[in-house]
Image 1 (cartoon, rainbow, N blue to C red):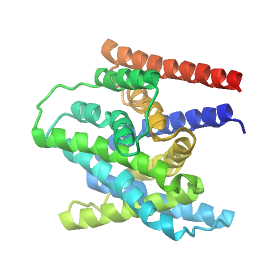
Image 2 (cartoon, rainbow, N blue to C red):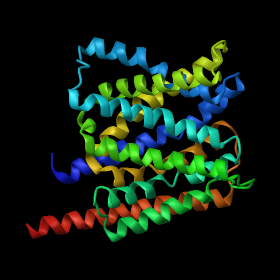
Image 3 (cartoon, rainbow, N blue to C red):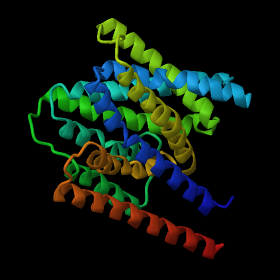
Length: 301
């Protein structure tokens, strides 16, 4: 497989992952309407994935044995990507508007690029920085950021983006990105569920006597995000690197707006449509620049 097709696969995997993650607010909303809450949803969207993934791995006769050097990183990835990130974002909803929280969380592509530059000494071409800044700032157009600006809520939402950025870079550099996607998703679900269980029991916030409808929506979230989207994002990071994959993950708020309009009858304003157009334009600009850069490199060989 040549470099161009390898990278193209990464773009497809990451973009599809973002589209799937964009459906999560719908399933969250429906679960809450059926009696769930944030802590319980955070637990079961990982827990329901474990038996499904386990059954698939048994049928495939796929070993789940991890190299010793990767075991600790895999646990940490689940705690960060499936536990702490979601928890911080949900906590922020208690003190600031969901629109403001979403805007702050989706600064994570910028955090990914900055952390990659500061810690890993990885640079980005100027055109990628431009695309990243335009796309990230355009997220603010997709949501209603009205409401109070409580410092603790702002800190939690911003921290959720920073933790998720650290998770993306960790997957990129530790070697866990090369694991089998289903094995990766399995351990991500196990460690994420373990963290959420401990936190929920310590705080007394878990609700176990939920309706079948609430569990159905949490199970759908588990299959779609904790299995499919997590595995696709892992492969996208492997092919593109953490910073570039984070840029294509900005399709997530776009899909959230579109799916919200389709399934929850949410109104899509002209402001939101402008934000979608800017994000799509920035990503398209980056793809064209990448193509031209690769073509120039091939011509110089």
